[in-house]
Each structure stands twice: as C-alpha cells, then as structure tokens.
Length: 265
Image 1 (tube, rainbow, N blue to C red):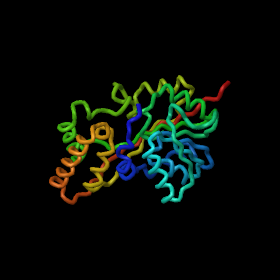
Image 2: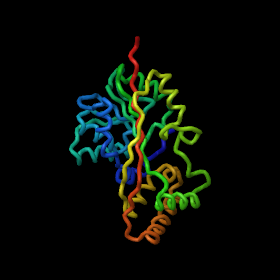
Image 3: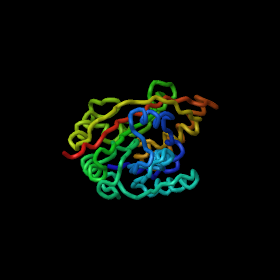
C-alpha cells in the first residue's frame, strides 16, 4: 500500500522536514527518553525524524522502502554529521532481529502500511515494555492560503483525488486524527495506549516553498507526470498572482500515540 514518494524525493526532503520544536520535551514529560535507546524509525523517508532521534542520543536504524528517499537520507546525514544507520525495508518486513528495539517510531506513514503485517513485525522486533510511537503531522485547513490551495486542487485533479490519504480514507471516525480502528488493532497486538496527545505549531513558506510542499503530498504524487507538472505550474502562477512576495504562516498539528508493548505473563 506504500505510496511511491520517491518520485518527489527532492521536494519531500526540502519541504516535509518539519517537526514540532517541543516534540522531544513533550515525550520526556511523559516518561519517554531516547538516550541510548535502540530505535527503529519505520518509513524514515529522507530521515528528518531519524536524524532528530540520533541527536537525542538514540541508536537509530532508519527503515525506508524507497531507494530515492534512502539516497537523500544518507546525503543529508553526511551533511548533518549525525551517526545512524539506514536500511532498505518496510514495516511489513523489518530488517531487524527479534526483540531488537527499545523504541519503534513511525511519522506520517502508518496509514500506508499493511497494518496487520506491520503489527506482527513490530511485535517481533520490539522488546517487552518497549515503546511504539505512532505520529502524524500535517497542515491544517482554515487559513486563506490552505483553503484556496485545496479548492484549486479539487477543481483541477481527477475526481476523488483530494481525499484522506491511505487507510484514513475508509475511516468514518477518528480520535486526534487517528482512525478509531487503529486503537483496537494496537490493543489486539498487546500494545497498550500510554498517552495520546497533540502539539500545534507553525511552519513558514514562501510561495515557492508552498508549491514544493504541495508537490510532495499524495494527492499530487499519485498523478501521472504530465498531470503533476501542469497542476503545479498552474498553482505557482496562481500564488504569484494572488500572493506576490508573500510568506505564509501555516498552522500544523502533530498527533502522537505512545504505546507500550505488554510484557508476557
């Protein structure tokens, strides 16, 4: 079910690199510390979270199925000077031994997994009493630029393209953005919910950067190349016309589910 975000690897690395500044302090307040923790970051993409985890003192393996995104992640790691390991793999086939990890993290990717297979693998790799952190972050509607962009895309993309991503599309009820079905699935695989909360933050974009951000979302990535090119050219023209020289402050929300693997009794 993975979306091939490698088609827009450059935009993904440049414009989907935001994390809440208080993410790790909020986790520490809830008893989750990454210092010396053996951590597997699934769906690592270009390594934004993986590098942040490394800076927090974790021993990190970033797992990503896209060779394009892995290549960019390794380049960015060298530039940042962080020390971690990247591996080709997926949530459904983790390149890690049984009971390997103290922590498993997922950012902006759970809705693309075959969740049953992923949960079986996570249960295999995660140590008893280890933590699984499922996080999702994205921009919010309600500002002029976001609402106008979404309307623009609805009018130009094939019908049904602008819809919740991946498994979210089938869900009719959510808690902090997470489909209610996920909570039942986590519990059935002996992953107890320890904390559920969200963080609000703001990301600034120039018109060019906002175009880059939009080009990396699934609504655009899923289209044929010619459609993507045409729509993004038209969006850039609209932004220059409607918001010349603007810098947009876009509200974002990050939702975090902290789960703990129950020890066998």
